[in-house]
Length: 258
Image: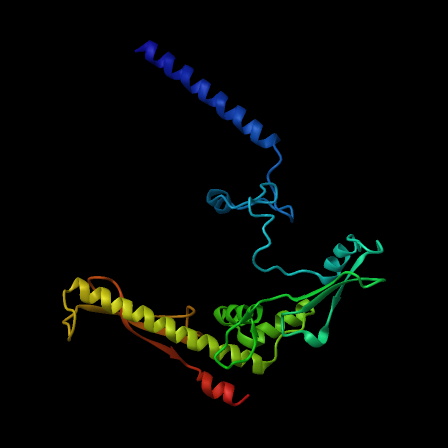
């Protein structure tokens, strides 16, 4: 018995020594920080999200969108020189060709004009209204629509960042296209749900006797939310077979009055 106690005491001392050594090592190391100097969250570390000191394999890939100070971008191109005269290349923006958040950029030699190239900063999209809409504008409208702040929130961003955005008429055009795309996606999903439920209940056609539940939710907690949704859920598959969106504000009347 005494030998067991001595062994336990010895193991406890070894464990305390390991903990003390580990704590000392951690306290002397400089914590990994992001660009602003703050320590990354535990959740980001667990998910393996790259930090400033942990370079990503995709860091050099020119994909997606980024907010760029045009002054910084213009100074970057001055480091490149014309092959004909050796003078720096300049970046030129054409305000008359701007379409919302899509800008027209030109690169040219400051002296001889030997090197010249131009492009829009966003790709175009197919539109039901047959108008040329740019992808960046569509994504901006969709983002602020999903955030629940709409055109007013988009205007606030532009005013804060010193950017020229899109007009309210263009915003409405994008809303119309988004609505049509949403309706098409909704029909496709509901048809898939019906096919899955019919397959589970072995009823290819006709009416079905289903056990369902009904549930609803508001966009925000409390009594301040203006939007809510209610759904009928099939019990066996857990798929939604019908739903209804509710609102205390009529968007049609709201936009008509503007």
